[in-house]
Length: 180
Image 1 (tube, rainbow, N blue to C red):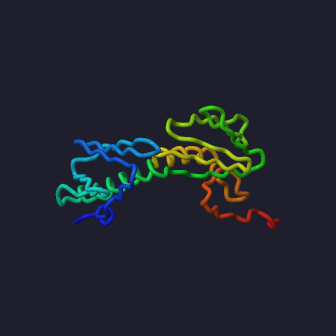
Image 2: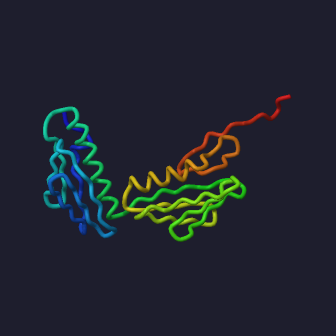
Image 3: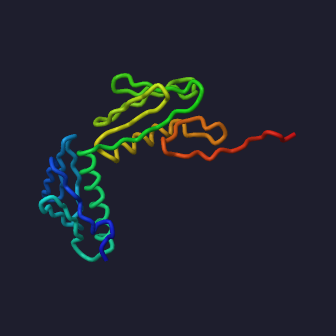
């Protein structure tokens, strides 16, 4: 049984080169280069402007790896052409962030400020309204770093203070008003 996601071919746009050697896939594009180790459970073939991933046998593990590696390679192609970005919004009185060199310095209502070292390959931009934009070519690094920043002060349900994703909706609670 083949994976539904894995059956789809990966479109390779102009300006992107894919090199498959043994168990390593290298994708080079206008924004950079990404590498991914690949399991023996799948076979990868590049034909013209398409890349196909096929399972090596009919096992359940091969079917799972089929969809996984197809999506990982698709994310690599998207990363080196367009890149990935996540936006976080800081809400709260006195909550702010700024970039100092390779560090993101944040005041989040605690007595000390948080200093996060920006990983290699990522760029962080902060605007005046408390919006942090994390961008890079590796989807996993962008998601992991934005998740770590959000965990420093997750949004709370009463006033909505904290750090949240731009597209995240916080369910608000009413509180104790009216109780005697």
